[in-house]
Length: 199
Length: 88
Image 1 (tube, helix red, strand yellow):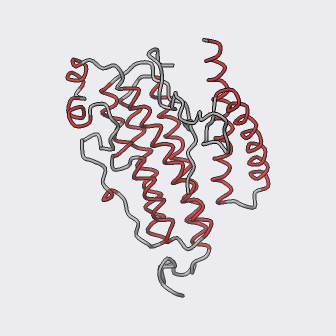
Image 2: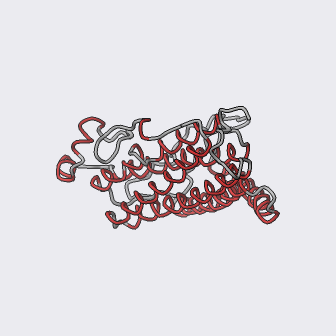
């Protein structure tokens, strides 16, 4: 089970609302490489994972992604405070506003709603861990792109923290892949799938 | 009022730093359970986190639903994403 702690993993304090930035950053909530997809990817994959240490890594990274989902939500909430109709129309935030007002909803920056089709839980040790490694790098690239488009220091500070965590998670999944391969046949990792096949 | 808010922010920041150290060493220990250095760091920051959390909660209210309570303060704001008009 999970227990909620009433604090953010890292502070989010944005002085200046900016709906244009919200339009971009919402992709890390519900976009193809966003935080909710990341959390669901690891928390689903861990169930069929046969190696205890790797289950631990998937559980703990998947849990941290929920804290990142909350941080992105806080960023979006603070970027869309006290908006005038004029700001909403001029910034391009109007296309989000019409469906959600300033409520938090997981969509990509393109407007495509969050979909589980954006990740896999393949029930195969090597396939799932390679997906996880790629996912962390894809999220890191998205944060790089956000930092290219946003120049508010309050926003960039929180985004830089999240970007750094993608790199740490990538390193832990490198460890997870090594741990898994240490228990597989070093001559043929693909000889069988320990998530499914009986040896 | 201003000083109180600053103290609260500082106490929360200190707790976030300890919690971060706990979480990062926890992830590391998942992969390297035999690392004595990581285990020492985990134990050290877990104790510091518990102390900072208890201090914060005694002054500013519960961060997790309480074991027992005389008054129900769990739902009192502000919630973590809420800030005032000046962005504080």
